[in-house]
Image (cartoon, rainbow over the protein chains, first blue to last red):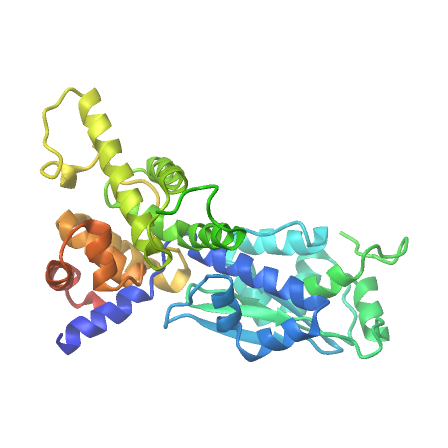
Length: 189
Length: 180
């Protein structure tokens, strides 16, 4: 096959069937959920997310890449999904941010560029200054995964507690907190 | 022959995973025959129930069998529509006309940087013959091998490869320089 046809093939493969990203995002979400309490699974995911997806029967196309972001103390990551928002594990604040980003592309772009300023200005929430916030936007061929940070002590650090108090935008951290104490979740709208 | 109730739990789980992972592709396959996204979804549902009902012969050919189920369910859907319209249109001749009207809903994921490309490809796909289009879809977006395509469509490996090449050439002509 000549070079031009090979090039066309490559470009055609950039497109993916509608709904495929939702399947991928759901599978990655499932893997992350499993890894929260399973260090071995977390390590497998860290080493080879493609293989972990393969174990679930899902094959990545050669054009699709997965970027891993390891949460560490003092950092919070949020991924804007391309497909549906899986609401079950998210806080109302995160859902508000994601839903807004889904319908307002300008907001989404601003969120990726300057998350703190965008969130504070748009929602009038105050986020703790000690935490760096990163927002990543999934694309058809580029998906982001946030690996949960496993605190060595198994307890929340002061920074995490600050983040909880300020409604930081980390779904993973929020999932780890079953029920914030009354008044701790101090997000003001 | 695999039959529901005779397989192991692991096989059942494997088939469930296959169905979940392949669903978006199956809808694209169905859309090669039926215009509307809703109708395509119905066709895939019907194909999935056939998959569970009749089973498949070998695990490694599960994907090809699933695609074959969608193709047959799509053709049945078209035949049914045609019968209802009381038109004597032989299956295979009138397929390219598909259902009347414009296609609804996009075939591919929509994202900002690929939007123009997506529209151009979907328009071009509409204009090439079905026999080439179905091979292109399976090879490029289904990542099927030519033997798998041959099995799914009931054609030889060589025919699949030849239709693929003609399909690519047709697409290149339609898309012009926009793909560079």
